[in-house]
Length: 199
Image (cartoon, rainbow, N blue to C red; front, side, top):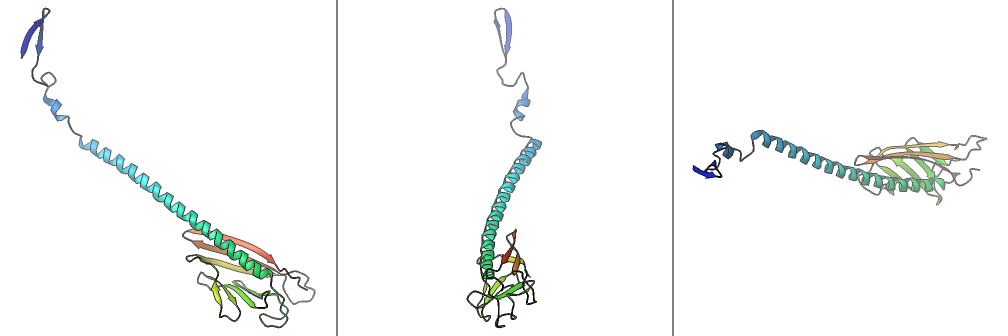
């Protein structure tokens, strides 16, 4: 130790570090186990939250794109079927359907003589596909252009078409369609009135 007098006072100075405070100062250079566990827990929670938000955003974007594609494809199919059904002709020769009718239908199909005089049919095959048959069955095509689209329901009803006397109603075909892809679903319904007068 160094002893000295400055202005009448005795000053004691230590040449060793930590003499006054003690040697405990050397042990406070790291983290405790509890501090380390708290830090790991905080960083893990923040990391998992960020990853979860990112995955949720990607899935939402995927659903939005699938929904947009469904909307586009469904609009095309409904417009295509509606145009063909609207131009149907009344049958007078039993070539395609019963004589005197405009449409022959079941709950999942509709058949008619189109504006070109060809027998045309739209139907659900029961395996998630919506199909069109023009002619003798040799030209069956699937209506949806994009793969992965599943037809959940396809329902048809016809009103005002009949051969009974006094039927003054113009035939109307109602189509209901429900499709899905990648978790997105679309449901549409339309009613089509025959363009040619039923006389």
